[in-house]
Every structure is written in structure tokens, then in C-alpha cells.
Amino acid sequence: MNNQKDVYVAGFTKNAKEKLVATLWKNGEAQYLTDGKNFAEANSVFVSGEDVYVVGKEENYIDFYNHYNYAKLWKNGVVQPLTDEISSAVSVFVSGEDVYVAGLCKGIVVWKNGIEQILKSVNNFAETFSVFVAGEDVYVTSFEYGAASLWKNGVAQNFYDSKGFTVVRSVFVSGDDVYVVGDIASVATLWKNGVAQTLSGGSRAYSVYVSGENVYVAGYVLNDNTKKFVALLWKNGVVQSLTDGGSDASALSVFVSGDDVFVSGFEENEKRIKVATLWKNGVALRLSDGKDHSEARSVFVV
Image (cartoon, rainbow, N blue to C red):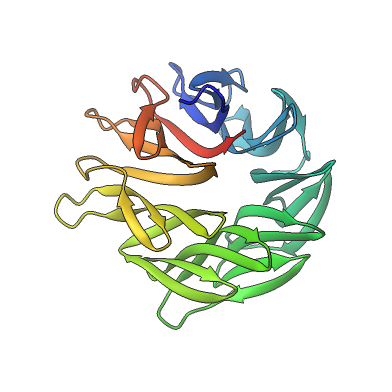
């Protein structure tokens, strides 16, 4: 990797006790955010100045019948619990002095500097995917049974398509334009200001990043011949395969720095173990040794 750039990747590794450990890689070197006694995952990383923020969740295991997840925020490796309620944290964004975390806690929520705002109380299945802040505007993507939504300052815009089941996962704001990616009926889709553009059939879109006039989307597609998932990167709608389809793989996050495009995700090895992987300009770097499962869920470059 370019020594002038620091590349941070958040995800998890599995230890010898079969526990998931929340993990942050900096330039390929792993830092374990949890001690491996309980299941934990890191879902998102954001760097602001000298501070590195990571969010995820850690399980509190009491006994076989009582074990619950709790949202966690790590700042420079030091944990800052967000709530004592059952919860999870999936995305972090820092704007000035303010730290925003999107997740689930009694519904779809955003924490601003640790203060919880419930966007919607949900009793049934729900997911929160990403948070993005542009000026005074706070955007969040979420899904609950029957509704895919983009929230702007607490007001939901629902995404519905007659073609089928719709999910929106990632949001990025550039100037006056709002980009959202997800899928409609298993078709990766990019929305620009609410107008949908189909990317590929049989696919999923997980992350969007805009750099200048270029729009990058990370995801995967099913290879019809091998029946394996192929990690993909779309640039302005043109697709590039990051893997050859010989094993399952997925691209989960994309970040652009100058002329370099970084994608994080995973690719299974010959033993069908998921290996956390970082692609820089299409070239893969394995972040773990492949002895146990790992995933690279978020990438940030400074």
C-alpha cells in the first residue's frame, strides 16, 4: 500500500474459541477491540483528525438462555457504550465535533454525541444500514418489514418499486445530489435524487462513494456458471469483477482517495473460510491468515 496513506478497515476475526472479535486493521496490521470472551463485530470506521472511531456490537453472555448484543463505539481503541438497552451500531460519521452513530435500539435510531434519537419505534424486524452528514442534514438508510427508507433529519422517504422487494443500504451526498444504493428484486440499483438506475441483475449493492464526477458502488453478483458470488465494483455503471467466481466473495465497502480506489469485503479460501480482504485498484490483499473466518466490513483512508 501507499505509505503516504493510512488505510483503516473495520470488521471481525474469529479466534480459537470460535468467538468473533471486533477488529480494526491499520495498513494491514490488526488491532483487536475486544478480548475475545464474547462475540463482537466492528461494522464501520471513520477517521477525523487524529481520532479513529469504530462502531459495532458486543454480546453480553449471561447463560445459554440470556445473551444479548449491545451497541459499542470505540474511540482510539477505548470503548464507549452507547446504551444499556439491547442494541447494535452499524455506521459512524463524524462532522466537526459531532459524532453520529446509526443503529438499532427499540427501533431505528441515531446517537449524536451519545444522545439517542429514535427515528421510528419498531416491534418487528428492522435494520439500519448507514449514516451520512452533509452540513446540517443527517441522512440514514434503514429497512423494516415492508418499507425501505432514507431518513433526512428524521423524516422518511420510502423507496418502493412495483418490480419487487426493495432494500436501500448506503447513502452518500455530493453537493446537491443524494446517492443511495441497494437492490430491487435482487437487482443492484443506484438511486440519484430518487431516480433509479439498474446496475446488474442477480446482484446486491452495499456501498456507494462519490469522487468528483465518478460514482463508485461495491457489491456482488451470482456467477451463473459456478454458482458462486463474485465481488464487484461499479464505476459510473460500468462493472469490474474483483474476484473470478471460483469461490464466494463480496465487496462490502468502497472508499476513494485521490486516484486510488479501496474496497473491503471478503473472499472464501480453498477451505471455504471467509478471509477479510482489501482490494486497492483491483489488487487483493488478505488481511487475515485464513485459519478462521473474518470479514472486512468498512474501509476509510486518510
